[in-house]
Length: 469
Ligand SMILES: [Fe+2]
Image (tube, rainbow, N blue to C red; front, side, top):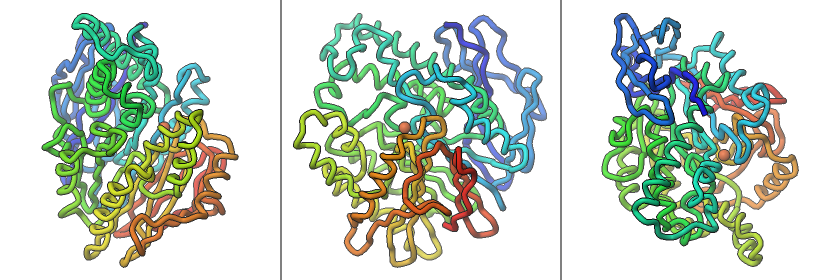
């Protein structure tokens, strides 16, 4: 395939009362001239990598406070860089589908992105949080005969030349998939004008990564797949090379957890994929690196948990599925959740850490998640008021059948309290009676003075009323 000229895409590195520092990337054919970026001066782009006939370029830009502009190859873009006062942060997740993602009519696939892009004309949005499954890479493993049987039927050991052969094929396939998706109308418009912060979930690697059978997860094919996915993640979701560590990332672990402080608001994203296996969600190293990120925060903290941290009692369903071998695949999906019985102690540890911060002085914590392809909200009771969980998913993944939303809403009635005395309750979105809404969606977090509220943009029902959080 020929990779089109695509970009720019902006990645937030820092925001302050002086403005923003962002990385800007774009793709050009391998033999084309480097892109010409300029702010109030010309900027020299550096090549991050050349692959599949295209080069990924990057510049670092310091944008002043207010409505800043930059140009890329003569096209001017305006960026809202003021994060000091009233503002809106957008949150989206699940940008694709498992099979045939790009075979859908583009206007349909990208309609929520087009909606968000149009919104930028009237509403200043200085930040886009990408909460997981930014691509659905599931078909990447079909790029080579050694991985096409993934995850059930792959060789456990690879020879040296098989390893490098597979590595090249998968790296190219990831590169092409990201490039094709980036060029989608609506998405490309948004990410050129709104700096992104991204955290991955399973589909950025493959369906169920970390929760799959041990035999698949420990194979050489898995090692090559993870390494190719991680390189592509760094390139296309941070604007970094495979050997760089993004400056927003927490040190001391293989995990790419990060924290960013804006005026009055801290955003923290634990990496729930890099060190996951069937027994744990984050390794001891990843936990040790993550813990300090919940200290000395601004008054408002948004924690992005790519899989929802508050939800119904799925462990019951998981136990029931263990009784029927045919349900194995679904069992992997449930193992992937915080609510899995295998992760109960770790889930309690995570919720305790969030609640401790939430209960400190004037601090408030809100959890943001995607993953389930439904819109949902929940709360956990704490001594200082409800801790909110907001779920927005997916922005381009099709909504599941109504029946699933009904089933989950019924399951939610059972209640759950992993921390004694702090029950979790699920609630309808504003104006909705049951907890789950089966429509494509994205979320808007708005600060007015000291107060925050949340609104969901739903594909059919439109924008919800504001929920104070
Ligand atoms: Fe998803």
